[in-house]
Image: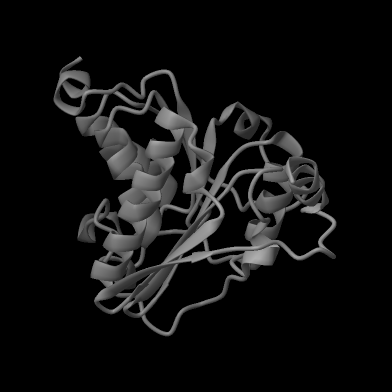
Length: 231
């Protein structure tokens, strides 16, 4: 109730899924819980290590060796009324829990290429918006994919994952916060203009790149047809 009065909006009726509770995921989940999201579905299969602590602020030195997803759930529920469900699993094409279909939006904060491809297909099939994010040093980017409306992640060139050369806490904070803000805005407004463009952060500069789908892309063929009809 207090959050609604402070913010001027309520997210209580929504369910969000966060895939990966590392540097980006800790920021996304914290901002969603702080904004009063009704339910959070948290997914990760990794354990906490000392090298995580510079940017994954939901964990402490006492958490080293524990499962990330259960520690994140515990910390988030300590200060929030959000209902959190934790899944200690690795997302693959053949290993996506049925409950993920209940999400109103999915935040992708994992660098695992297999998971990114599997969740892109899942998003397409179930018509659930997907918010991408990635960082490397002082560089980062976000992208909101709305199935059948915006160019697919493949056309946007954002589906690729991989280990980064360096993980800067401030960059994780900026990109994770942008992902959360983008997702919250879309949940509240359903404004499709929020999707279809990559927001790039490079050291101290932000830029926005509008994506145009490839005419050869099978995933985006429905978008092409709709554009032809609109024209």
